[in-house]
Structures are given as C-alpha cells and as structure tokens.
Image (cartoon, rainbow, N blue to C red; front, side):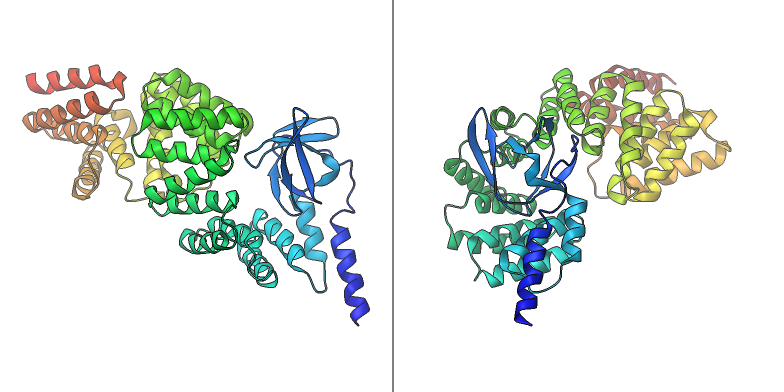
Amino acid sequence: MAFRQILILVVFVAGLFAVPASWAFEVGDWVAVRRNATLIAAGQRVDQVTPGQVLRVLAVGKGQVWVSRGRPGWIATANLVVVAEANKLFEQATGRLGARDLLARGRVRLAAGKLEAGLVDLNRAAELASQNGEFLAPLGFGYLAAGHPETAIKVFSAALDKQPQSVEAWMGRGLAYSQTGNANNARSDFAQAIKLDPLHAFPRKHLGALLHDQGQLDAAEQALTKAIELDAHDGFARKAMGRLRFDQGNLEAARDAFSIAIKLDNKDTEALTGRGVVRHAMGDLKAAEADYLAAIEAAEALPDNAFMWSNLGQVQMELGKFSEALKNLNKAIQLDPEFNEARSHRAFLLVTQPAARQSATASVQQAAADMRQVFQSKAEKTFWDYRALAAVSAQRGDNARAAGYQAQAVEQVQQNGPKRFVEPAIEALKRYQTQ
C-alpha cells in the first residue's frame, strides 16, 4: 500500500510536466508554471517562479513568452501549461500530496475560480509546512482573491513574523490594508516592499493608486510612472495612470493610457469603461458609445456594473438615440435601484425628450418619482441630480424652482466638470430665469 501511494504521487507530480512542451501560447493566455524556472530580461535573471504560480502571457517570442509578477522577463514555454490543462491534471491526481503539491494545486484552483477548494489546499500546504512564511504568503493572496482582506492581513502578518524580508508578504499585506481602508498601514507596507526590492513594480503601482485616492496627485504620478517604467505591460498601472490623468484634466493622455491597457487586454471592462468616460468627456460620443458597448459585452449584469448601462444610456441620450437610452437607463436602475445617477439621467430624458416617452403625464410622474428618491437619499448630490431636478420642475411649470436648482447645477459643473457642460448649463439657467 505504501508503495502504491508513492507511485501515485510520483505520477501526479510528473503529470503536470507531461503535457506537450510545444504548446502554442497567445497573448492574454493564463498559464501555470510547471517547474522551478527563471525569468530573463536583457540577459539578466530578474525573477524566480515556482510550480503552480499563475501568470499572464504578455508577449510571445520563439520558444518563450514574456510574463511578469512585477519583475517582467522571458520564460521558456517548456516551463508552462495553460491553466485549464493544469487544473485538469491536478483534478485527475490521487494519493497523498505533499506541501508543495498542495501549494501548486491551490494556486491553480484559485486561478480556475475554485476559490474554496484552492483555499483548502493552501491552508493544508501551510499546515504541512509548519506555517512556513513561504507557504503563508500565497495563502494570504488566496484570501484576498476570495474577498477576505481581514483574514489576509492576519496571514500576511504571520508570514512576516516568520520571514520579515518577504517582499511578497509586505506587498500582499499592503494591498489587504488598502482594501480595508487602512491607508496609512498600506502605504507603510508598500514602502517597506519598495525598500526591500526597488525594482518591483507591484508595490509602486498600488502605492500610486492609493496616493491618488488620497488626493496626492504629484506623488501618485511619480509612483505610477516608475511602476510603468519597471513593467510596461502592467494593465493595472496603465489604468491607474489613465484615471490620474483624467483627474489632472489631461484627457488626451488619459485616453492614451486606457488605450494601452486595452491593447494589453481587449476585454478589460475597466479599461474600456475608462476610455469611454474620457471620450465622453471630450465629446467624442460615437467612440464613447463603442467603448461602453464593448465593456458591457465583456461584463456581467451585476449591481456593481449598473454604471456601465447608465453611461451607455447617457451617451445615447446625447446622440439622439432616445429609445435605446431609456432602455439602458432602465436596465441600470433594474440592476441597482439605489443608483442615483441613472435615475437622474432617466428623469432628465423623460421630461426633455418627448420622443422617449409614450405618455407625457406618466413620464413626468416617473421623473418626479426618480427625483424624490434621489434627493431623499444621503448620497452627495451632483450636477446631474440638480440638472434633472431643474428640468422636472420646469416641466411642471415651476420655473422659479427650476432656476434655483439649475443655479446649483451650474455651481457643481463649474467646480467638478465635465467642462463641456458648463455653457449648456448656464444657457439653461438663463432660460429658466426668463420664462
């Protein structure tokens, strides 16, 4: 019996390496590492990878692909297998597995979306390895992937107790802290990771995003610029730079940053939506609509994605596609009934565009109901909210109230943009004041 278990385990470990070494990889493929391997860039060793680590193919060369864990480089394709194939081989394996086997399988299961099974494997691997820091850090990332940042913080902290020089654990805990709103601890951990490994892009890109959220735009730009310099294929850093450039008012640079992210992954809904928002702000409405449609095609119809349908409805409203706009705004509200912006756009559409409504009375009533819900909510009110409330008031014949609300809309748009709506907002205010 003992001999049979040993034989099965050898077959299992070797099985991951038994797939064809000439696998044809394409940019965008998710691949699992089959054996310990080295990443090479400019003739220098830049990183070490271990079995089960999952990487994305960023470029393809002859017999090698360009990948990155924050230190990008080339790796021979003989060292890789597509995640789906790796998962299949792992699922077929039987017998007793050691800590490293479970670590590899846990990583692959996480990448395949099997979060619970992956966490079971990673916990067992750490247990068999006597809670070694090398095994705890991947477990921490597993809890992050499963949406448990508080638990991840505890695991990363335990890893750092064992291995205080672990860049991976400092980076992971920093990310977990940022996800729980503990910005100061996150910045401290990212800074420590950078100190330990100045050439690693991961902590710099997340530090840049965090600094942006804190309003430190110059420091964020510095961190993101360095992250992109270290890893030009990092989509997260490109998107973060796009958002930063947008807030800096450099719309062309923002559009270009999102475009690079889309070239890296043409189904990246964040990048597609981001570029759509920039193009929308620039007044490039047809291009914005195309980006929004592409994002929706790649996204799931979930409450968190309601803004995608709202964005699409807004740009279609401006393009004069009123029926389509109403359909998509209704979809956004269906996905998230508490989403104020979609309600404000729908209310404005219903009272300003007769072609969008079947019954004038019912449309005004619906618009008024939308505005009641928006202004009864505790959310901060925006230009879109005041603009819609002004339009509803005017439609009901109360131009004095309309002018008052529109004045607040003008104040909002002058302070926060979009700039191209400033003049139309002022013209609407004058119209309400003279009617």
